[in-house]
Image (cartoon, rainbow, N blue to C red; front, side, top):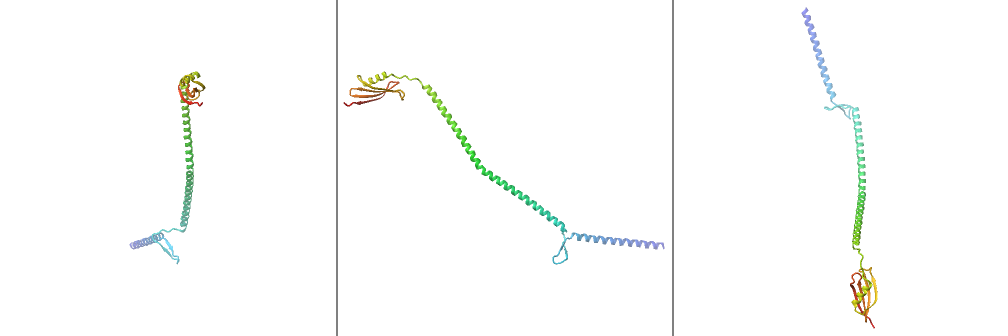
Length: 217
């Protein structure tokens, strides 16, 4: 009797364990199917209320989609603002460059005028210096050449003139011009029916000019 009871107990235990294993297996299989269903996204058919599952795609809820759209929109707005700033900077830079380009010719003209002015001043200074040098040289030459000349006397000039015309000549007029170049005496001498005009160098006593003219009776 005892042996029979033990066998019955063992059979009950084995059956209980088998039932537990079967239940566990069923649960695992059900859980695997549920996970598979969760990984498969669904799309709603517009013409019907059925939900169609799309394999190999992840399910994205409507709330994350809205958040993504808003973030994308904000990002686009930031990009547009950055582009506007860049455009404004470029425009400002271009305007400054244009202004600089406009100012360049004026600066160039001003520089050219200043260079011309400086050049003219240098030329004027050089010319002035050359004139002063020439004047100094001339003054030095004049000082060296200034020697008090020795003039012949009026009587000596008359004597030279009579000697040239001949004995018996009569002096009609005598004029001295010592400031002329060269300094001289001008004489008018008459002999018989001829009149003579002479120019005698006042320093050397040489005859510069001699003219003879017949006098009408």
